[in-house]
Image (cartoon, rainbow, N blue to C red):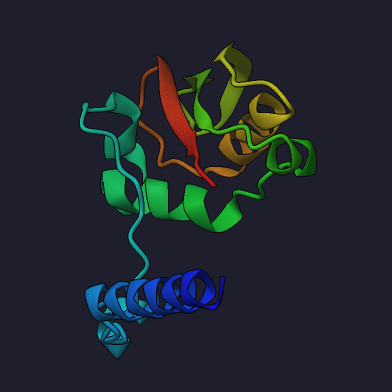
Length: 136
């Protein structure tokens, strides 16, 4: 019996050391920690050319304003929501609709964030949709 217990102890000790050896243990650089990666879709979104910082600026603003809904966090809901709206001639937005939602309040949060976006006046009306990613 003592041999079995000592064998199990030795086995768990070796497993622990091998797991520690596999981890890198290095901390990320300060520059990498400061600059947070922002998800940007691979497709071209026509309305992004009328935003102040372009596509990257628009998704940085979305990422800064996005607050994960508590129900979605609790249920571990994640995915992409698609919000449709109209960009008017003067740069204002209207006619917000959720085209695709993951549920648990993600669609409503995506619309709230899309309403906060401020665009430059394009001079013509543009119906568009933007994807907003929810990822835990």
